[in-house]
Length: 206
Image (cartoon, rainbow, N blue to C red; front, side, top):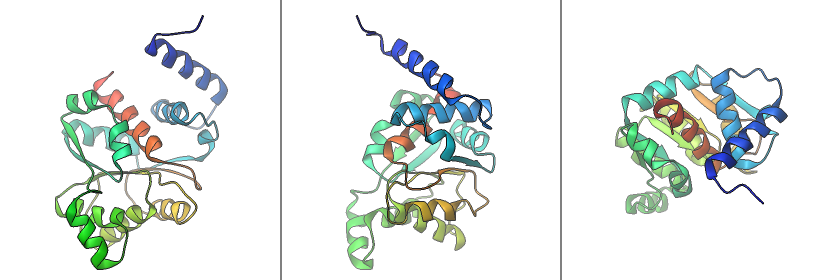
């Protein structure tokens, strides 16, 4: 026989993760986020590479409680975020990657659509950012921060890959912005979504 109930499966998974994680320097809420990231990836190395900065969880929770629009760099990240919890929090998601303006701007500037999507989000007044795939999106966001064009309430910065991912996250850690990052190449849209879900569940429950 096997376990069929989805919540029972998740609860058992979390128990296993907690046992394997052992003692860490994380707070209780940080551990909750870390466990969901590990649950999503099946990768226990995350417990060693997650970095929380500038009171990330409190600031992100407060921002979510206040409601508003959250930027995601990919549709995959948007798809992975719990819509019922999002609605309870009076938040919505915006992914500009397929916006016609992004295609035009990318062609004009010779840069990635992901970076151009950030420009449009900032123009629209978005100030909560979730980046799980594109280092260029994170680099561009930080350029706009330095230019004084946006003051993010929080940044989930976990782009994945071998070109620019580690460097973009390292650069984010230099900023006085509430953020969560991973050290090195690991991350991804699924990881970004898991972080947002953990925050949403803290705010509105399951």
